[in-house]
Picture 1 (tube, rainbow, N blue to C red):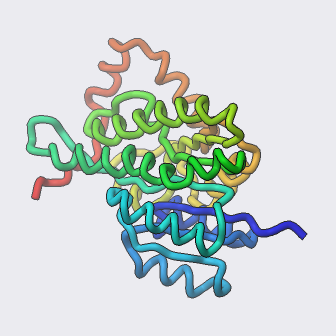
Picture 2 (cartoon, one colour):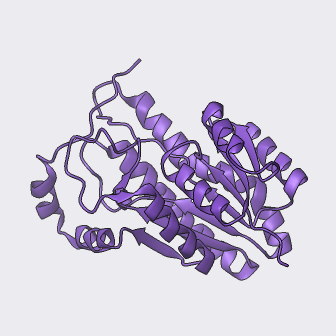
Picture 3 (tube, one colour):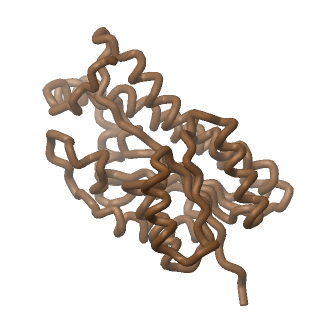
Length: 257
């Protein structure tokens, strides 16, 4: 009988991360779940069999605390088969309005937090020639969306980082998978003041994402229709993109503290 899959997920207290955790739990995986909201992680842990879910109340911007959580998981359960860097935030931010803190926070979580998630596991996975590193990017990385420059920039950085990492790890026996969600029904999107085409429920997204991870598909977009949208946006001439989006609805700003 094969041993259960071991999966380590950041941003696991809600939205995509929670849906991924639930999908893997239903398949009998051993989970290491990271998020700032320890109460939400504890609620998930209490609803699942003992010793199958380890929780860590950690902010991914704290690389030392994240490395300690990784070390604890490895000590208790062994090297994970899958590490999913999912933690992410979105802030409406506009240059010239005192939003520098918001820009920095989004980049710290969405990009540097991804690097910090993989760092404690990468060398051990290479030594074992086993494992898959998964990054949750976004269709928003394709073009700079007005009002969401911080988010688009952070996800674009994550996308390019994952591509470089995939090529680096390919000959070393470690898989790198990029998942780019379109609009997914989560707390992050529920207050968006604009139409969200092809909106997908988080549990349906998670089921598709876990299958892509199992196959080690290099790059996937869900829902699939958004891949076509992304391809069209990518080739749209700049002058046409500028005219089409300059009056597009924007995510509300978060006022500077």
